[in-house]
Length: 258
Image (cartoon, rainbow, N blue to C red):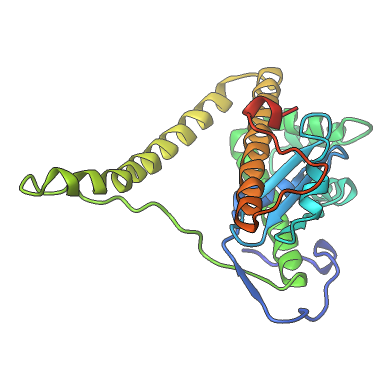
């Protein structure tokens, strides 16, 4: 990672207290730091490292109350629009193609700068990839400073390991016990295949179609996160043998996403 200017990092100071190991989901955390829409609220789970995203008007209105009552969640402060705008300004002089520099300079002038900037890069694949790397580098600097400020030490996340097939001589019971782990290996391969397919689709669709796909994916992600939080909260209440007064946890996927 290249060096980052002091102005690119959020304010810091000495790390408060002992560090807490958290298996951070870097990709989800990067998305949370980038998305500063006022209706979107993201939280880091301090045990699992998962990022929960709550969208006003989509998630259960009581979601914020339940999250506030759960000490395992830490609210994520995204990077401001002003700071992300500075990133675009700093990237433009790094572009070698004069025509693209001109388009990008015009794109960031006025309302809708972020959308126009991305659209201008759509037909310049190498420069688009460089922009993604440039932006991710700065997002990572903010993320690391934020984690340090909250005494969080990111650790490697557990991964599914592919297990070789069991010998034919083993019993059916042993083969059944190995099945879940083998499925984990297939899930890893399938995920890599899907990522490649998604990248190929993004290269071919237009800006409007891509925006529709992203919006739908965001909706599915929110719905999944809401359902996962509801199940986690219900499980915690069952372990404690209590149910919060005046609170009804969603019992179905449709209820969790309304």
